[in-house]
Image (cartoon, rainbow, N blue to C red; front, side):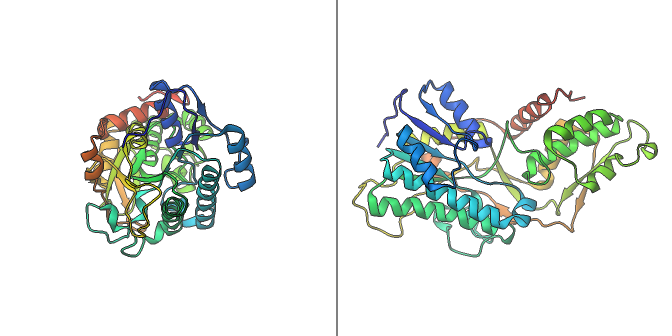
Length: 367
């Protein structure tokens, strides 16, 4: 059944300032939706139930894209597990409950592909959820996201709410997080290769400018770039090395965030896992939907692709003392494909446009 979303429907994008939320907001504007609701973190703490209830009472959103959350890569997940589980569980709990109280027509909750077991068969089907142990490096985040799926299911079973969930693969694109303390692998690689290129040319002032925008560099990276002692810096033009975490063998799937935004609106309009809404009582219904490209590559292949676009002369070094994470994480997207949606942006094109956005933020040049 197609959900009727008119151009003047009140649509709340929870988390509009992040990578995913900003892309959804852009896409909705491009599609002509005029009544878009947003709230900054300063305006609304999504972890505060009373504040969220007050906001819903005042704004009465008809449709909600719940894409807010605390996110990060392996380092951030490993060092801040309490933040990851607390923030994410509180955010989806408050928004889902307020959506129920104030009778939101439909809510789409966005999770993550890390919800699936570490040793999942590949590609990963939706019904593999909770069939095995999670990847330890992101367990706290995964548990919070699984709780979000079950929360939406519970509100449907008990109250008949049309609350659905979708699980995207690894995302990237404009407004990504390039802070090396918390970023995911693709933006981290783009930044490392660009900085290595600047260092090889002796453009230290531009590195310092970049650091003020995207966050401080780890000390080991500063040393490798020659920032701690410029007098000992090797001759300009000498190729720099870029260190990649892990062995480079894990396989990952990537989806450009603009493709995701299009998929989210498509799912909001066309996906109804509850054909007998308000009457279904099954406890084992699989209602979440995978979103991905259906194609993966090794981290080494990804690094080579970024290298080709950002700094072809770079040397690659793989740090085997760092964790690899899950061996492979490729989603089965056959259900979404059968519904009629497929991504449009290829990986090479996506990396190039993301790199364009990155350098534009601080007025740097590619060369």
